[in-house]
Image (tube, rainbow, N blue to C red; front, top):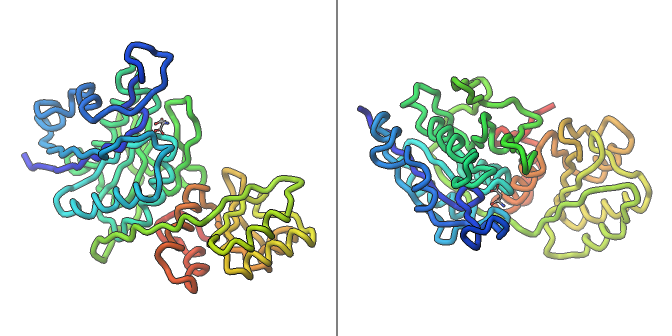
Length: 351
Ligand code: ASP
């Protein structure tokens, strides 16, 4: 039987959590070691279904300190990128076990840091811990294994970072956490699902990225001096003027109204112009889950365009944040505006 090799990296998350005080279901959930998770999933063992029946060889790695994903930083994104890089030639696919809270941020960040990716990197986790009698962990992990070890199951090999959760396979940088209670915790509001995992697995290969033509490498630098501002009626423009004076600040993501609109008051426009003139990259994304930033549609959007604000098109907040951090961390400032408008890794649609 041909052997397929899969690297599973455990970072933490609810999937492997147990109660701080064992036996007390009222005590907070905290991450447990890999053994806790592996013990609860017999199909992963050497004489379990995947290895014995399908010839899949698993290697397990774990963060030294497994964490709730709310603790994730760009250093963790870099750490994952480096682990994938060091092991790239040895494995056919990678599974990252991750908490759901910031999973879509990590998926977006990895889609940029893993350059010329030719193998599946599948991120999964669960809403209920693996010890829970109604846990979704086992099916999520089994589904992720099917996508990562695609060839064994006669499925297409998808050269992308994907989130595999509940019965959905979603492009990582198009995903967002939509529910903290439903088993279906993630959505892809502006891009079709790449696959569905019902009784049979269907992959829509017209929605997957083309395999790369250049060798795999990583660019795991992320700039953290950025800020996200959500506009609301009554927003005080002085805050923007004060930010413009912050010498360390490199980028601002403005979450605007509808199709990318904002107040056209003189004070707001002046403050915005000051930000752009003080070499801050300002990106416009919409507060709407679905839709597209078009700053030429309304006069209230044109003002932003004229100030030099960049359109975030239909990017999710997570993709926009990761793209800004990555571009500012890796590219020379002269290219940033141009690269923002480009579809680099399937993260945005072009008008
Ligand atoms: N707080 C948890 C985490 O993100 C939630 C989860 O995994 O569902 O690590």
